[in-house]
Amino acid sequence: TFKMITRSMKKKSQNTNTDNQTENPAKQLRNLTTEATASPSPTQPPRAHNFTPDDDKRIANYWISTPSSKGAKAPLQLIHYAQLVHEFEEMGITVTGDELKTRFKRICKRTLEFSAIFNMMKWASRNLGKNAPVDNLIEPAMKDYYDQWGKAFRFESAWHVLRHHPKWMNQRIEQSESQSNRP
Image (cartoon, rainbow, N blue to C red; front, side, top):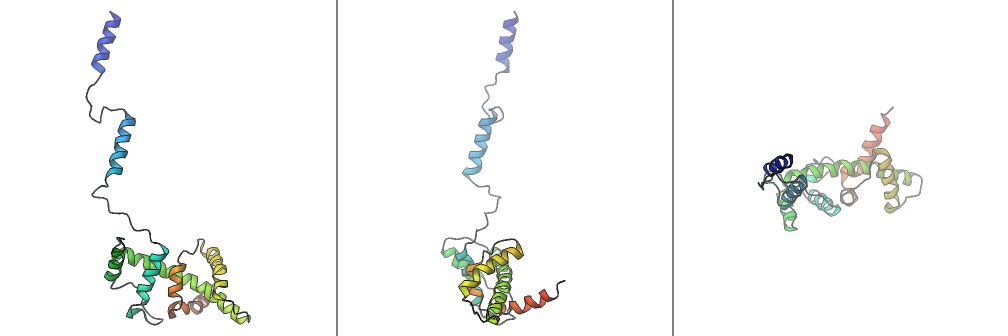
């Protein structure tokens, strides 16, 4: 009689329901993974664009070609960016105006920091009578940038566009004045 009771209990505990709540955990995980990769959630915003050096150069060229960018006191703002958004769309890249403005701010900050280092090296080279070519100064300036900021300089393509602008050329003077005030 004992065996009969356990058999009947086993039959009662078996569940023939096939909904997700009764499937084994491994199968549930597979289903969730498949569902998650099959289609993005409609409430999730699309991923932000990973900007390339070419994208950074395009943004820098756009800013430098605008009338408001002329002169050392030019505002470091990306205005009238709809045309730039359109240019990216023509290349099949979706970016928002906010993404472009944020990226431009980062480009400006990092390239101005780098220009301060580069311009000081260039100035020192001239004062020593060496007048080193630009290409010979970039690598040491990148090393100094890393030593000073703790990260690699990743905006060289944009810097080559911006470095001749008065704001970037004057960076050495502003930077050296602020460094002389350091303890």
